[in-house]
Image 1 (cartoon, rainbow, N blue to C red):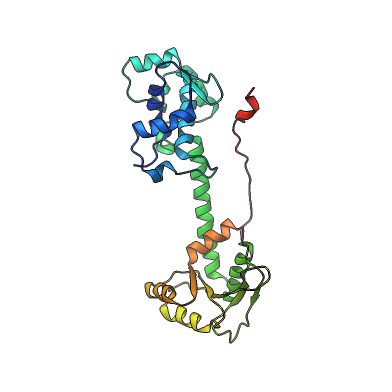
Image 2: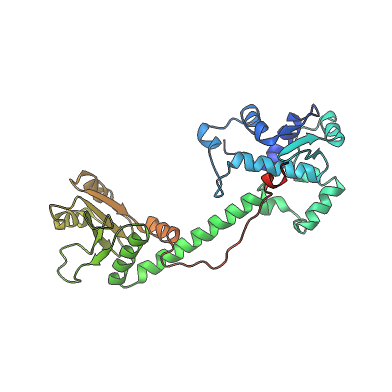
Length: 295
């Protein structure tokens, strides 16, 4: 299964504190994870962009929503304790708690009004069971994906020689040493040479193919390998399209180490290393500094 939504965590979280004792959410997280959800080891390790474990982050949002409805309190930093109202919910045999269930509490309704989410007649259809953090992550991922697609289209339409320069500048931003562009005519299949280190002791040969209508074929890789001098052991082949299966196999069987970068991967790297893109807006997402409140 996938990591459960924060709505799905509300009941297990409330049930885990039914004895009225004070608990740390960080201590409850692995217990709830193992008792209530059949997650794989890989799913347990999934993290958000901010580095926090996704399961733990959603559990914190579940706690927040339960608190807004008055079913739990925060007796200490990072802590949780059930309220009398929370105990009544469990005593009444409720087996599922979600945002719709919490709307029966006036305090929760006011919370939704303050966050301006209640204007949607059917919030679930729009947001599903995503927590606010999930919405941020989802929106960011969507924006990046759209930028990558637009970037790839620009790469496919640019001058082939300029495309070579873009690839070399990307490698420079990735931390490689200085680069040199080869002559545009008679380069023998080599479009650029990059230093793997700052002193230029080891070279990497570069080949770039700006293709729109077809993928890189086996002869393209073969020609690239043939153009590499005997003292060079590494090469990188960039393309705006993709590589045919035989081309991939040819690169794998070469004596030199040939790294293939297709259009999709190239666009992702350019966004990651800020080549051909710039920051439009920047938002600081804040959270409580628990250490500030520790005595």
